Image 1 (cartoon, rainbow, N blue to C red):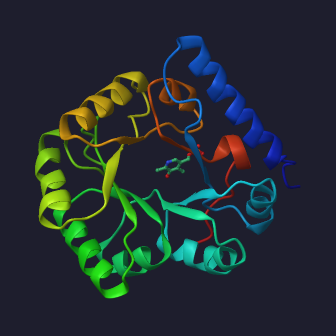
Image 2 (cartoon, rainbow, N blue to C red):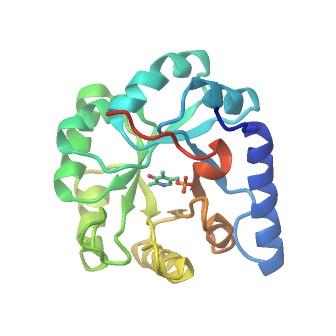
Length: 228
Ligand SMILES: *Cc1c(COP(=O)(O)O)cnc(C)c1O
């Protein structure tokens, strides 16, 4: 039997927990944007969030997003769709056509492909560079040492709308260390926005200045297994 999930209540609870965490520390961003990460979830839960007035949603795969969002974006034109998963160069054009924000730029090849796709489609999604703050070999993201070069390429050479940095801390580290590093790197490179914090650590992220938290499970419940 399907788990009973009150999406509207969960969204309200997440906001309350963010406000509390920021009030307790006296820091951070109580009004940060909550990206409801709906990957692997079906229309019923997405619609429940839309009907509760929520408009920022995240997906991690281009193809899945294409099967769920084009009609919904027509029905709810103020939806802001965020790509939070890794991007392959052969999917860039489709990603640029559908998403309003891309959080996972992590190499020169992808940045160049986004610039080309932008010229072809006339679309300019806002961009985050994903930083592999834990320098984990299996994880996406640019190494901290290579960040400056990628920022310069995106911002100065390609004139892309680069707005900030994103990270996913290693599972068994204190996330605060990685959020602090991301904030420091953003200051150093003159980027304003931070995309950090998931269901397990969004209160810490918000109290450390996240502008976007990316939350799936705490809003939609546990994800069904992928069917592919
Ligand atoms: C799935 C995903 C999330 C949401 O994860 P939860 O732990 O369910 O909140 C956030 N960010 C990225 C990049 C994801 O892939």
